[in-house]
Figure 1 (tube, rainbow, N blue to C red):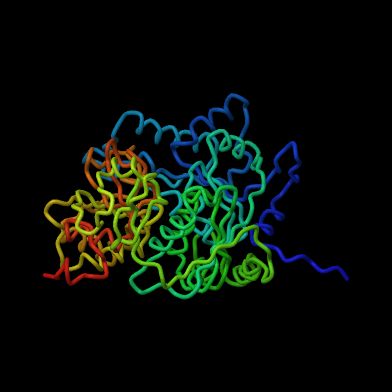
Figure 2 (figure 1 turned 90 degrees about the vertical axis):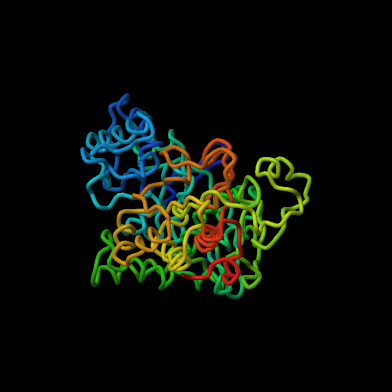
Length: 472
């Protein structure tokens, strides 16, 4: 009797979706279960279909939303939305037109279900274990939290998937990141993923899909796992994965696009198989001590340039350009650096648990006079839930701005920007030069750390509340 070789989760998903195996001369053809679409990377792809007189191959496996170019300020009395430019308004109108023409479901204005593409997919239950998921956005890796192989694609590839529901891909290698022990109570998934990226470097995951494993990962809730997988691309990885478990299954129970009753239980039984086999061999493995992870922030201009919030700006000569752009002095402490802007939101940290964490810090406190703080829910569903809990009142009472859902200040293309030379503490995912506006300086952090900095008016250790934030 033959013995089946143990397989990684990547192996299993790839085998289940491989239409044609790759060869030396050509990539594999991979079937796509779910194609997520937004307004920025889709116009040229739909145009390519028009030129060839092609339909969308599987509109039932295609789901669109509006997020990147949408303003987070509300419409005026006449229903006019304050787009930052005519081009932004045109992008939104073009996706609305394309979805009508090609019979693609759009969670747009008036749906009550619009939001950031990597927030709405999971909350709809469209994201499920064992799937292949693509989107014209690099943070598609978010969906890997559900045991799905999810990755970003370019505009040309968006057209390929619209036309064929398949994609040419070479199989990545498998990298296991095992986090032993438990995270401290004050340490979050954002701190953990920044720590991991700092350990791997921004190219340490290149050519790999990262599978996050270990006790600390299993202890995370689904929203924390989404934060973790979301930033896999920042280590250069193609995708991030967490195997399906009971936490995954219970989070999906009752979602709009998930069946109920016996059908759900049958599906859940299949979902439980989307894990790596016990003796599966990975191409590479690293181990992280969860107990050693502290509240972590970036100091430089890529997400791998990280230190503990209590640390000092590194002396490494290779970081000189980053230090100059960020206006740091080598060896200077992060603590005490004045902050101009704080942003809570994005596909990394714009979910309800993130808003709760920020509100817990702000409740009974005030945002420092020098600080502008934006809080932007990741979807209309998150917005409704937050408002039902009164979180918007906590933010407003503290002096923060409560905005409409969207990508907002994560990327300076919708009117929400950080001024030149200003320092922003942001819960988003990229701190590149100019990412949040020309000349803007970005420090990535968790919602808890960001909210504490908003209160203090400078970078602080969120664990040391007594030194920065007495409650009123």
